[in-house]
Image (spheres, rainbow, N blue to C red):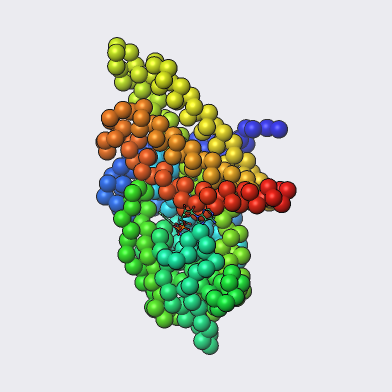
Length: 381
Ligand SMILES: Cc1cc2nc3c(=O)[nH]c(=O)nc-3n(C[C@H](O)[C@H](O)[C@H](O)COP(=O)(O)OP(=O)(O)OC[C@H]3O[C@@H](n4cnc5c(N)ncnc54)[C@H](O)[C@@H]3O)c2cc1C
């Protein structure tokens, strides 16, 4: 067993870290304060070829392996968790569905633009009445000649208003349950489609999260992704990769919390010594570092399984749950290690604390991850 990254992965990781420290981290607080989509950062990532790392070169991507993409997500999220989720949604559930399930025409139309960063992607599954129980969604699709007519609304959609194309899940017949769900590629300017309210959130302020509204929205039949009734399968199949991505986001947040806590506690003096020299403080950091290392092993293992086409559902859920719980834990501990300064906006751990929370909620709450893991255990997996 060899736990080392390959030479190519290690070189990419170094490049990603340098890029994130120079081009992302210095601006993270500004984008958080102003709740602005970090368009300039995305432009720079696109110029470097970072918007389609795991997509084959033939379709405009960088053709690198899945773990390399995960390494990038970790470094980006360490610098700015909002940019991390924009990238994760764009790649894992915005670009991959079209690359994996699109017709050749759909792939050629969208994937090079998405992988090149000219387009931003989005994934619209959640509705006001359908969150964890996504199969109960109500947005309807009705076939009329060469078109489908969509009606309904989606909620909490990342990259809302900034994406050029949305993968939208709607039902042809609610009586069919999950087997009635079908996926559609909806262009931003499709008649009958509009972006609704922008959510005001606790954190991840630079990731714009919106409502989407469909009112007799006419989508050409050529924009259906996969077959009728295949939508739920498509939605679920993307979740393994999506969850490993969010796990990497959690890992990046946790690492940033540890970095900041270490830097601060070694400098801050009370009672004539750096507070790090109090065992109560240094043990806190030792615990954080250990949990982060364990999370990293789970995340990289899940990514490795995925890129080798091995079953990874259970490991993806374990990685997502553990790494994001670690993000929240590390952020809480970092705020405590900063004392009162940890509660003040001028210091980065306050933002990490707010950003960490949602990683335990989206891409399947951590209760749902436990459900997935328990079911796998039941099946002897
Ligand atoms: C910032 C943000 C960005 C998001 N981005 C997107 C996006 O881009 N696209 C998209 O489609 N969605 C997105 N979501 C939606 C997100 O995936 C859902 O919020 C999440 O799946 C939970 O659904 P819910 O909010 O309806 O909670 P509910 O499903 O109503 O859950 C409420 C509580 O009940 C628990 N619960 C529910 N069912 C069970 C069960 N069977 N067993 C145990 N506990 C259970 C949950 O864990 C939770 O604690 C985003 C959400 C946020 C906050």
